[in-house]
Image (cartoon, rainbow, N blue to C red; front, side, top):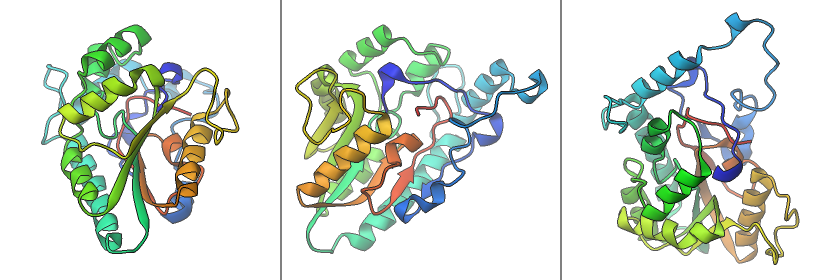
Length: 257
């Protein structure tokens, strides 16, 4: 996800338990992005969720008992585990297929949890404090993800990350992943903000998140990879094709178009 330019939308309480797995070709996405782009302007205040109550429900969903840490027995943890289980079963069923296979992952709130940072900042975003946290490698792993990614890495899958973090945070991100038990990836793509831009990013320097991530997946395909699965916490991580199947991790904290 593109942290530096993200559009923050706290989602309605009814969505807090959702953890959607998207089918082959993205067919299941139709109508699924109901908490972001395309919402009509509210005509009455009664149609808007109370922001304070939504924040409290997000904390309850993560099992936050006041220390701004997600709980292993929370609804969030159960949702994440369910998506991870479905992802692993999909990868297992294709692990013996020939050719170069890749698993493509987003970073923030897909493999590294931002919940502590978000809750500690009242679910607001400050690029300065966020960058400090990135450099300090303070993001813990999303429950279960190091084990899953390690399994994929040892069963024939090249691991690639495509993140909206800027290029100057690449090494800190790799170090954070390593410290949290993730295997060394085949590659980590970051958002390039200045020229020269990669030739495959034909939209540069004005790529949307969907363009940046889908064109990068297309680039991996041009290198001979079959992207068996892509996982992310935002619909914009997953749209645009170039993956056999996409998996949506739970994240009710913010929305990135």
